[in-house]
Image (cartoon, rainbow, N blue to C red; front, side, top):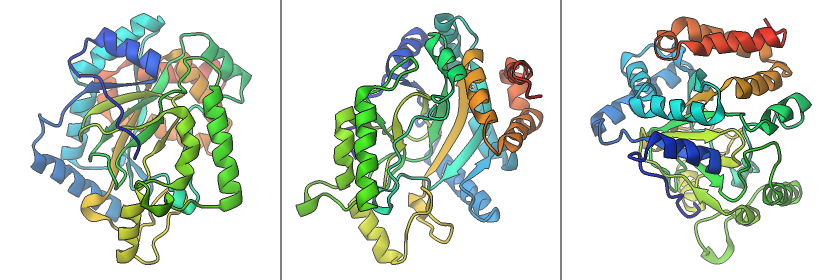
Length: 340
């Protein structure tokens, strides 16, 4: 872990939160840990584990496939809270375009960066948009907003329970900072030659040696309380917090053949109370959505992804009830790009 990122107070005005997102690429919208009892959180985690088990532990499950009232009602209540909607309203004013919630709402389980297995993890979620001139023009406009709402069901720590961010790199435009590019290049070279990372030598801190390359970016670890609502922009350079060297060593004692496969823990390993669950949804405005859709439409699984959006609009009445313009904007983006 790096030093903990100091999150804003949930009691700040929606206007201040909108300004923080535009400046820093990340902001806390609301805190729910004091409103939901510990046994409810434990029930959520237990019910999610049962759903993942039934589906043989996929990387993620879309919310419409989780037929559990407690899970769906809790997520819908959190995402439709006043704090979230007021933030969207103020951010809409600042960008001149309506901000709303978009699919897909899904849950991810035990998805980590893994330097010890050769998985660096640092990335921008907008990474696929940068190569396209169409997307760059949207990002240059000064009105582009697209990102994720995240809700964790655990604290962050040596088990890895949230994300690390590169605090010094965020740019609210179409360019990547010099620090980000240099850090990414150094990391790429490290893993090209060494394949995986050992811990720092001589017991210096509980950190992976490869993390040295990220120090250029002033990295911080995000540690909100469980069920807090975080919004972060797609251009924010970040990674899933890896399991610490000491904790990984402890896991290996229990599971000697443990390894990561494409950033996730294989289904045959269960960390039980240490399992990581993250809930995600997209948010943004029409300009950001256009850029996102353009990038995704160039990928081989685009038709399946588009169908996932429509299925969530159909099966999750939450969208039509709380964010009625979401589907309208999505269909408009498809029509304008000839993707109907």
